[in-house]
Image (cartoon, rainbow, N blue to C red; front, side, top):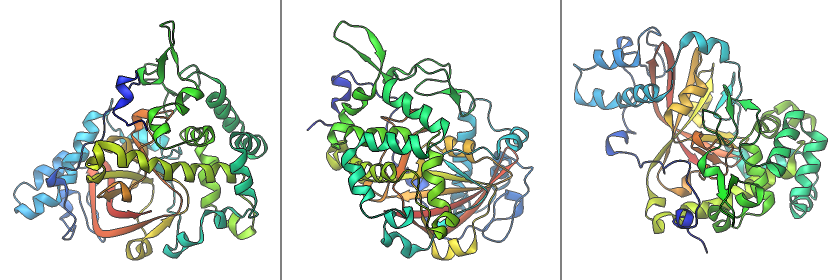
Length: 395
């Protein structure tokens, strides 16, 4: 068995460091969230002024007691996150990009099933015959190719061809504001997406290299698992997630166009939890980690705050707060802060094979239940209001 520590010894390069465990002063979960409008924060019933910045809000709260200052820690974290973004956050630019869809921020509406729905299984929501998933899983990559060719979009087919046949970073196509897949912000292939062959030449990783990655080997991922995961980190995620969230499709009894891909993705995420368990001989696997997911142009509905909800599709989260803020920035944004105490409660880190590893993605499987803690706070940063809702995920 190959441990994660062997990555560097065997020539594998990390794209980024591991997420830092939560600092003790970040760990507030109890108490209410109500603050004054002058602070730019609110509980469930008030809104702060959208013209105040996060820093101004913090300065206005300096005279408050210690418990109030503790409840405003998220202000400083979000202000730091904005500082780390190249160009920061611009409210005017946000108006032009608010409708863009990405993995870390759902557009326009919160689509959650009832908590009991998780017990029914993902096949129930895909509306496919019982034999489709097991037969397709045995076929592996061939089944993914067939599904994407038959039911995917042109973008899906291009992304799949890139994953199957191209070297990492070799495509000139750009996404997400000009980023190339497996490249840095200057368009150069990432060092962690290269390998050195026997003659000493450096080239971009191919599919076989991702399958041979120590993390994939530790989790016993097949080629089909790797293809499904890599495909999800591209624009093809929309063809995976949107049908699962489409209640009208479900009511019509219409099959999901990519059921085997979804099933392989779910299976791969379960296997990758072994990678988390192996980290630090289990010590870091039990560390507390806060993850983030954004929602654009929404407010958290009362039904969700009272009962929680089941995310019907795979759920992308990030350990990088600035990533979630950037992708969810809108006139009204909800920022889910997922409180996880160990690898048992969180989706695995899939950065080692993501087409955009800088996103620091932790991917939860379909039908993850989200339970609100009751802790809600609105933070205004650079003229943009974020309703921060603390939740605990249950896989």
